[in-house]
Image (cartoon, rainbow, N blue to C red; front, top):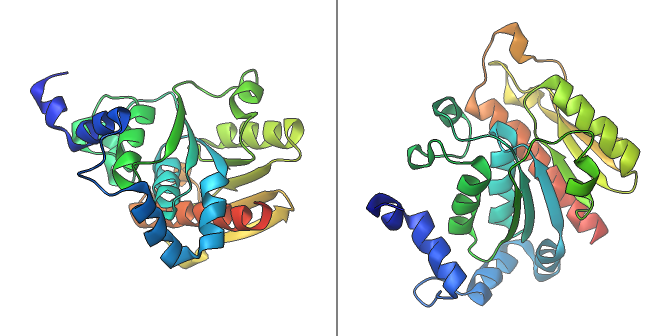
Length: 232
């Protein structure tokens, strides 16, 4: 680790977290109390107990993770095989200082600056039909946040088949420059929610823009929060 890395606020905070040195930061009790004032004590307790897996840490997943961390959802499982690239900066929750680093590591550092007491599990792997069971067996709520349609379809198909009792939140349709008001959350079954406009496609060549992608991610995060409130 060079001097620049040593002075990186995320690395300083992570080091202090590992050493249990939070005297110069906010205590867990203070932070939880502040969150409870916004959300209510009962819901905040549910957030502390909930476990959520986020599959894909790009425009959808990184923004979902930030939203859940700000709410105080304590147990997050971050899964992505990719590294931070310059093309990510227009819509994803990464910074120039994280260029070339694994998204799992980079996003973990960012989330710990928001909520230092998160319990984050990471897997820097590509999700496949073969490993999906082992990767997702421990979390009751699963967020699909892939970029490609075929990856989305695979995850949805396998989760519904292998884990019929888990809750799945997926997204489809957030490309282009149309109004964010077209993005909706639909309850497909009692355990499956789908967010997005349902029609826009990156292949149409209209681009991806942060406001629309973040709106879809916010719908996913809000669906997860509603599920947590319902089942915990």
